[in-house]
Each structure stands twice: as structure tokens, then as C-alpha cells.
Image 1: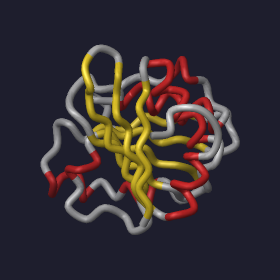
Image 2: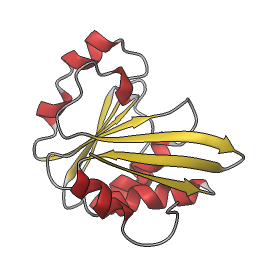
Image 3: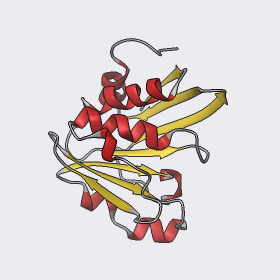
Image 4: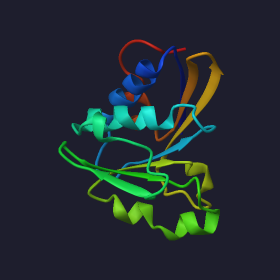
Length: 154
């Protein structure tokens, strides 16, 4: 397991970090996003979608639909929001099964009692103003690939 931390100074930079990750994610990847309400999880997923080749303009928080699907890129993106679920309900969704042919991004991923093996954890912390600390933690190759390139590295 590898952990890398970044500081972003705007929503656009948080989205850009998601984009860099999305360009490198393999089929079957599961990205678990954690952080307080309004911290930028959906902005990060917009970047993931763009990095996968889907339209970031289509991405919105799926709080009421649980799972949204975005196509049009090199891989399908399934975007889930577990905010309204408890741990047992979240685990029963079978998100790891849904995304075998694409990528699954899960907001409030810390609600999963049994996260899928090999998941990439993205923890976003509000530093005040528009600044965020974004920590990527997971399989070495995914974290190293996402960390490649400018800027944001701590």
C-alpha cells in the first residue's frame, strides 16, 4: 500500500487531480471517496469522468438515485453515493460486481464494512477557503500513476 498527499487550491485543481487519476485507471478499479459534506468528492469524480473520456458536465451527486452511470469514454464510470445508507445496506449493493467492465467511484466509501480488495481510497479534507488536502491510499501502481505529473505534490 502506498499513500501520497496533495494540496489543491481550488475546485478546478481538485477536479484536475481526479482527471489525472481517471486517465490511468484500469477496468475493474474501485475508488472510495471519503470526506465531509461539501468537501469536493463530486468535483473529484467529475475529473475521474473526464479522465476516462466521459463528459464531466454530466456528473452530479447521485444522492437520491444511489448509482449513476456515465458512458462515452474508454471505460464506463459508475458513480455511487452511500450517504443515506448504513454499512449493511451499502455492502448489499454489490458495487464491486457492478464495475467489472469499468470503474466504480463511491462517495462516502467509508460506509462500506467490507471494501473491495485493491480499492483506492481518496480522503479529502477541507483546509479552509478553497484549499483541500487530498490523500490517495491504495495499490502502489495506482497511487504512483495518479501522482505522476505536475503540480500539487507535497
